[in-house]
Length: 173
Ligand code: RP5
Image (cartoon, rainbow, N blue to C red; front, top):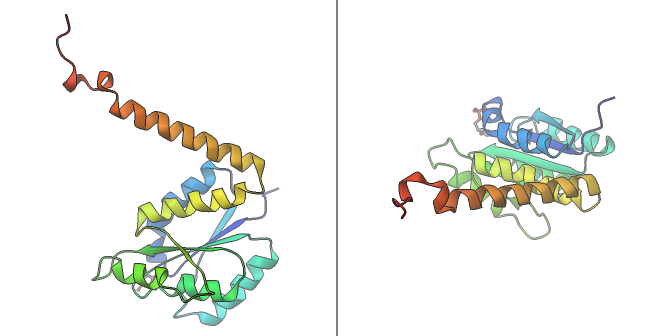
């Protein structure tokens, strides 16, 4: 049986989906069950409110909301739920994502959205952040988060090891 999704990823348009592939990959790498939907806060406000209620009742713990331009999706979702909302500002508009970033990060007090970076880096970090929140109550996910950090550090060390870079090797004695 497929496990019930713990993370719901929502984006404002089908055109946003390619940028979110990194987010889906990160969630998969941690073994986090997720579902994804395309619902526009501007074009389908009633459907969005319905979806957030249904997802909560189905056991979703964290929402990831990604949108570009005047990105109101994360903020509107944060107004509809008491669960954590991670907002991913997407680029693509004339302002290169700065418009979406300001919309996502400048939430009024009492309606928090955890804003991550613009575009695909932010999409991946939304997945990492969701896993870290779930890890607080899930030892299996916590172990995978620790494992990822160790592996990431090992990869970074290999990159700065001069012995691994033939261009920086002298002739030796
Ligand atoms: C936003 O407007 C969406 O999240 C998308 O990034 C942008 C453009 O949407 P489309 O016109 O491609 O549907 O609401």
